[in-house]
Structure formats: C-alpha cells, structure tokens
Image (cartoon, rainbow, N blue to C red; front, side):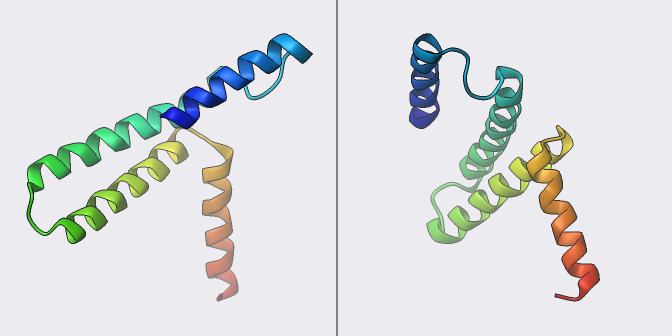
Length: 96
C-alpha cells in the first residue's frame, strides 16, 4: 500500500513538472481491484483457519492470493496476464 501511495505522489509531482506521464488511472484500477478482492479472500481464509499451523496456513493463504490475483487480472483483460497464459500454452505445446 505504501509503495502505491508513493507511486501516486511521485507521479503527481512529475505531471506538474514535466507534463502528463505514466499509466492511465483506468489501467491502474484493474490491478487494485484484483489485489483488493484477492487480499479480502486471503484475509477471510486466514481468519477461518485461526492460529494453527502457521507455516502451512501462510503457504495456503498466499497461494490463494496469488491464484486469485492472477485469475482476476486475466478476467479483467490485463495484457500481462494474457501474455503469461499464452506463453505457458506455447511452452506446453513445444514440450518444454
């Protein structure tokens, strides 16, 4: 969260000094939406698991977060997520 806040402040300062820069806010909203939904799901699962087996729980919660984030960004049409899927498919077809 802090890095995104810093990014926004730096971008605003650069925009004032040298003109419009960076990515459009519409593009930035998609990763934020995906991160929020994935973090909420991860937090909910972590809350349900309680304080038992912290390392396995952390692996499960972080894996869930990553999988949901990727799935949501793919569903929202982020080019990077789609490119990763296409690359994986081509690697499978090539037998790597």
